[in-house]
Image (cartoon, rainbow, N blue to C red; front, side):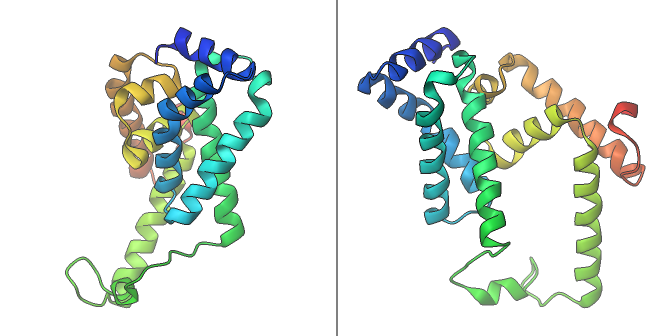
Length: 190
């Protein structure tokens, strides 16, 4: 949907138009679901996040100040609901095959040294990622983790579709510089 069409559909849905509501769910349902799934939530938890996100929209539909940016509002709400659910549930990752949890990519049990190295690498990466400006963190999360089509990313972040690739490249370069500096460089210096 074009931004003007989204705004019109939001206004109609706020006025009680069921077809407009169905149009919003059809247009943005995949985005909401993919954000929940990107947080490693199982199907039941992803469904809960999705339902809660849509409930929040119902509760706030008449208060959305920029209805043309509904995609960004939904993405932010789904992300917050996912993080809320993760805090409630703890960092559990249920699986049917628990033996996979004890093996590395080659099928061998990892050594204590490799586990320590992996944890250290992950810690440094997330520390550097946290030092990125918020717009870079959001863009990289959407493009790399969630992975919706660029048209959905452009709509959700309210940016031209042609800017996504170059902005992503600049953000990744900032992340590389932060990692090279040990994650201690401030985002303003990047």
